[in-house]
Length: 303
Image 1 (cartoon, rainbow, N blue to C red):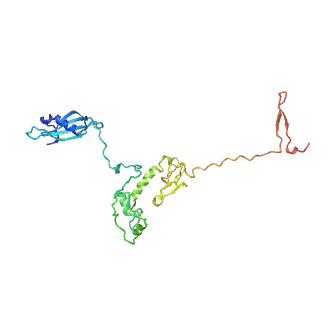
Image 2 (cartoon, one colour; image 1 turned 90 degrees about the vertical axis):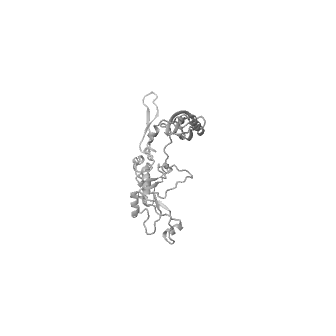
Image 3 (cartoon, rainbow, N blue to C red; image 1 turned 30 degrees about the vertical axis):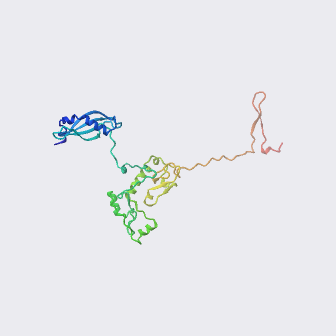
């Protein structure tokens, strides 16, 4: 029989009348004073009834206390089955739980936090594949290229111990070997992030007088990323200490502007060959100012 048919039954009379028993069970399970009025009775099956009570608990708007009671066939004693707090149609519910690996965002890590990486992380791959095989990040690695295109890399056995005397064993002894390195897929992901934050399409780069590829403050990276990225070393720039695209730029470009040289005044010129008229005193009659001519250099010593 379907659930719809079961719930459409008339509730058992004795079970429906056991409101006091249901309330006592709800008040025993809840804090004092949080069980409200009796809301409804629902028949769950033959001689099985659920009583619903209003919940007055702060923060549980729309929730209801559900107490299920039952009685055996031909018995007059009603017994308690279970007591539970259930949400209603308009109740407040917590958001759906999301695993921490999906909730994590850049900048969430703090001092002392640990962020483990999965063994099947597509961003990583074995750091050394043998002296006769190309490096994992090499463009000659056809196997890696196929895995990147499918974005589903096969897990490599990273627990194998290199044979004594091989290049891998020597690298281990010298401390030069890393268990895993960035895969091509991981490099592409990092490049996309860096280009989005400090790339050619940013407003700062669009207004820059020149790109970072010609800036003296650019510190180039090593490896394949050298062809597209570097680190900004201008303490006054907006990207100081960050990885920037070579096509990025800002107003702090080393060759964007040349400091103008201070203006130097013209040298003083003394003309000692001409006579300059100038006023000695005003005319006492209020007329024109009387002037005299000072002797020039050629008149000195002559009457």
